[in-house]
Amino acid sequence: MKALMAFFRTSVGKKLLMAVTGFLLYGFVVVHLIGNLQIFTGQESLNHYAHFLKSKPLVLWAFRLGLLAIVVLHIKTAIGLSLENKRARGNDPYDNPSNNGSSFASRSMALSGLVILAFIIFHLLHFTGGVIFPDHYAMKDSEGLHDVFGMVVEGFSIWWVSAFYIISMVLLCLHLSHGLSALFQSVGLRNSKYKPLIDKFALVSWVVIFVGNIAIPISILLGFVDLPK
Ligand code: HEM
Picture (spheres, rainbow, N blue to C red):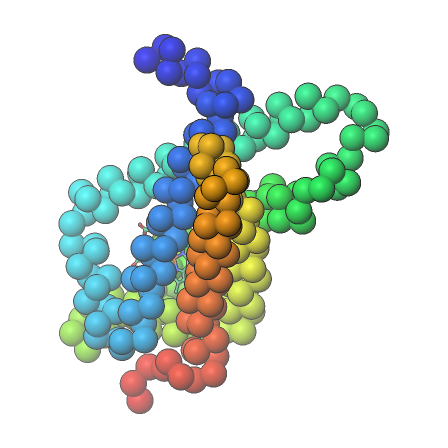
């Protein structure tokens, strides 16, 4: 155990930890997107799905705590790696990361990560805690179930809420566009043989995540998805 902890304090160990936690968070985003897309199947089906997810509180809380631990580990390791890189570069004014061939996405990982964190906090206060717009959170459907469909429709009908979501999705996908390739690099899989395949996988992933996520607020703003009249 001690040796393992020592390994995770090395640069290689930290990169591996970033890769594993990043991949798990990517997995969560994909699974969450698949669940959210059920909004297109209607109010009843989405509310039943949400009700089912909440019907096993023990599993739900184990999942939530696991997710929180992964997020904390991902951020803590990112800060550690970034401090390490800064120390390694020293104060050399000519060693400017903007001119060493790195992409815009890779240079803005910290900024995009911070906006995603702000988005998640807003999102939890909005949809999970009901602190923002408690009247949306309190909605019930005709069966008396928590009206997740109604809450999402009412939330995204507010233009600035949708705008904030869409901007956050741009930054999430910018983060993923670098992160997904980088994580395979860290585990040594992005070699000359697999690089084209991995880069294609990263591209398809972030495009699907972007289109899928913004389709929800856009469909609501355009009136394609609405509460039954
Ligand atoms: C348009 C896109 C999205 C919609 C409509 C949406 C909808 C929701 C809803 C309705 C809930 C609350 C479920 C409930 O407690 O009943 C939720 C929870 C959550 N969402 Fe999203 N979400 C979206 C995008 C995202 C993205 C991109 C992320 C992460 C980057 C995310 C992270 C979370 C987290 C961490 C939770 C808490 C999970 C839990 O309560 O256990 N969501 N989302």
